[in-house]
Length: 335
Image (cartoon, rainbow, N blue to C red; front, side, top):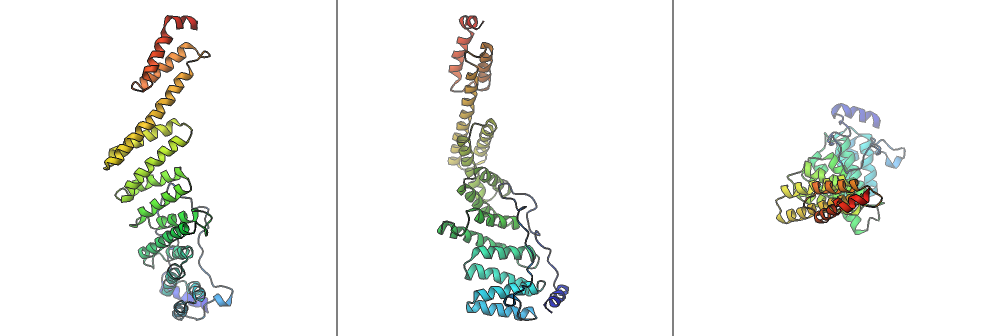
């Protein structure tokens, strides 16, 4: 009988378009892939009698669920709401029940983890039938509450901060145009940093700057990305491409920022990155200046350094060494 009512309701209430309707259509660098996450499945009537709908119409079932919630019988309310959504999936009451279930978890039961999953279900299966913007705002509230609880109890309920970050990622993917999207993105940056995933944090900073350039978070992301780039430059083995990219980034950041203090910092970091490149180039040139290397190789290396870095702090020492290497005595000894 319940399945018959569900099918009949489908004729009156259009089936929703299913998961993905409001999703961002492109990838988000710095986010974990959702390809290994199983897609949500529609709720189906339970085999257990206490989890089945008690009435043969959704209106009475909704009243039952609400009654349990008002009395504080939250476990019974959860079962009643879920039973309604499963048995009368295409009824208007199913949309209402799903949202009230998520609200129950978030505001009364103080369980943002379960609330987030229920808001995701609502957004994925009823995106065309709910107040999508309102639902996304609540889902964002749930993600923030997860983070607050995690800080308070040192992520006791989570394996690590990854679960919380995934919550923010889920919000951004479902509401990339929301007013709070840049703020949610910056939370992901901070959570990546908490886990010392600095390369991924840089990727998210770049996305914030590119997609939300007019937001306050874009300015914060520019400075944070600069900090992270310098950290990566100093903490990792020398990489010429990374160093050159860092110099270019700092020049761009100094050129585009309207914050004078930040501009001074960017220029300072640009000079530091340039100094690292020059030092490595100098060391590379000196590599050829040994008894086991040919004189011409050392001269070519030093001359190449001066062409590339004529104003380097090492330039004077290189010129003096070149004079020695080009002296008649050195040429004679090399033969």
